Length: 272
Image: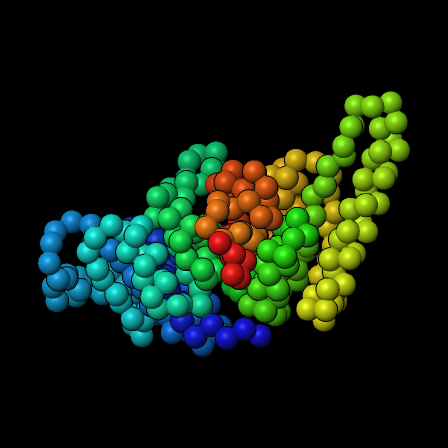
């Protein structure tokens, strides 16, 4: 299991920050990690006063008494990303800016900036904490990047069941021999996923992985897989400083906004 010595929670201290705080506390307890709660004050100038520090500390629950509180002034997106990079925390935890009545989540500028500019995994918390993550769906395009996302999920959550979702499409579906093409595309998807699972690092965990092969539109199939498996976490990979395109293609941003579960984003090592 990977050792996460420090968890960095980026908090705006609003009412909606309770969910990511509760999850960060749960994970810190589960892993024995040091929890750092970071908040950026975008108003005012100069050093943060002891009075301000005491006010923010008083807003934290008793369960967070042992957490380190880091306060700074400046631009929240830049300062939070810089802090995560400087401290080299093992995990950054963030919440969503808001969500509307139909369940779409808006990540906000700070979260988007953190996703683009830190190298460590970022956990976007949407749901209330009901316990440790027990069922996970990892979206894969069978790339090296999505392999690292899968390995991170397996290492961080060794007790969880992992569904590995590969969504494929059928080319030339409108042609006369579309049934033959569909069968060929399915067999190719099975073969490619089988090859992916034979990688030595993955094969060691094979008994924990349930292959899920779906044909269709990525965001729809991911949502269906999350629902059918009762998953409480979606895991996806991303290349370097690009937007989330590795595991989920052009559907990534929409999926991050609409997925009802928490989402763990894992960046490819050495990716730029």
